[in-house]
Amino acid sequence: MDFTELLDKRRSIRNYTDEEIPMGTLKSILKESTLAPSAGNEQPWKFIIVNNREMINKISDECKNNMLNRIASNPNDYAKKYEKMLQNKSFHIFYNAPALIFILGDANIKNLFVDCALFAGYLMMSATSRGLGTCWVNFATEISGSSLAKELEIPESHKIVAPIAIGYPQKIPNVPKRKDLQVIKIIE
Image 1 (cartoon, rainbow, N blue to C red):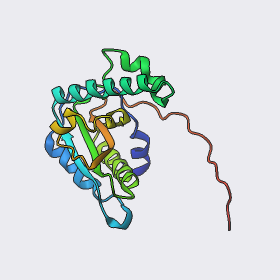
Image 2 (cartoon, helix red, strand yellow):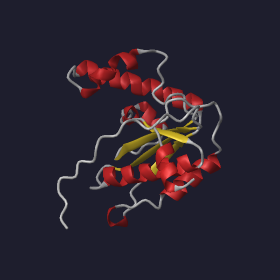
Image 3 (cartoon, helix red, strand yellow):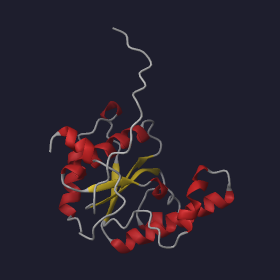
Image 4 (spheres, helix red, strand yellow):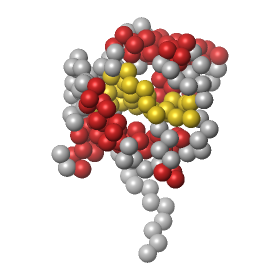
């Protein structure tokens, strides 16, 4: 597919087929995505690949509980708008995707969030070029300091930046309406 088609097909996917993704494909996507830029070429990103549905379900349940606890302790939390959805027992934060990739790194690195976000963009494009769909699920950043974090072997000094659900899309949604460009000034 050409670049314009790639951009058009890169959508946040919230309905996946049951088809599994071979580990080799996931590793190829990660390898290809290392071409992403990073400040000072630091390349601070690290990864946890979860290609096990039981573990993905466990992560979904814990993240839902953690978010609900966070909302309960602070009713003004921006996540309050998701409370009903998170309370729904059948809601799966990864939309039943067959795989999950956590992009994380040492929390002390100044540009960690920007660098990992750039990597995530490359990862989503790489996955799309292979007919896969992705969804950045920010709810899944809520597992630090837990027994699950230890099970996933997330170092205490690290921060999850981009939890990416990945799988074969049941369908690719249309491009949502985009805002008009807001160019503040053009200097010629």
